[in-house]
Image 1 (tube, rainbow, N blue to C red):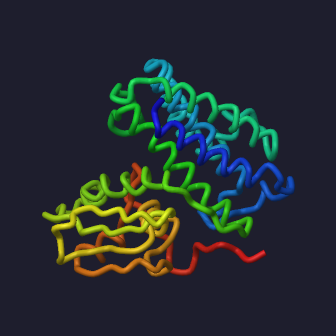
Image 2: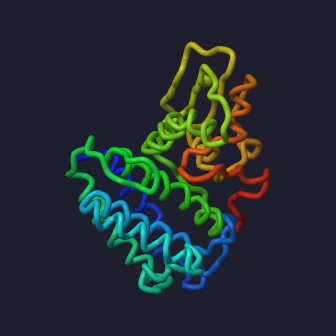
Image 3: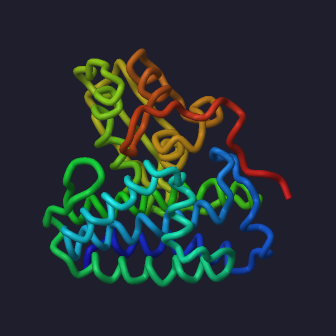
Length: 267
């Protein structure tokens, strides 16, 4: 069984458990992420889970999906509008259960697949392991705006290491994406996991260092928190620069949220 597929399902289950008892009007609430509603978040997660499954099972169908998506957006639909159409125009609990049905299926399919198999995506091809890890990251990152909106502090587990690793692996990508020169050495990372295990990378770099919570590091690289809204300790020019532009997801350069704009609301 592919461990990352199990982690993806566990992350999805945690978000499902948060929402299954939510008031139906909650799904229409705008979050702090680009004013997406909770329905919008679920449309997005559901549709791109479908896309990941297509890329695993049928390359031609995935290419057709991508072509149809791009044509729909070019013809005047917003990405959110088209994602809603692809989600059968469902909302609330019906949408939640539609998303659940799909994430359970994708988890099962990826869990029994060859981790090294190459699959297509909107950007470069990637391995099966990387594909399902990216779905985990997306679920965790977009889940943050839902936890924030509903006023609940998320309790993370050590499966968050998948997201930390994506953050580490996209150090160079962050610079390439902005047409900047990649620093010769990546900063040292000394992060404490949710279970209080110490996770370290690049231990030989004493000039640049980032230390603190693995959860907060993940929040910064997924751009769900501004570095100045965390307790991470950052020292060195490169470390400070990276944390100000870190981006572990594909697409054009995105700036982190402004300080104080992303937070967990108080009930």
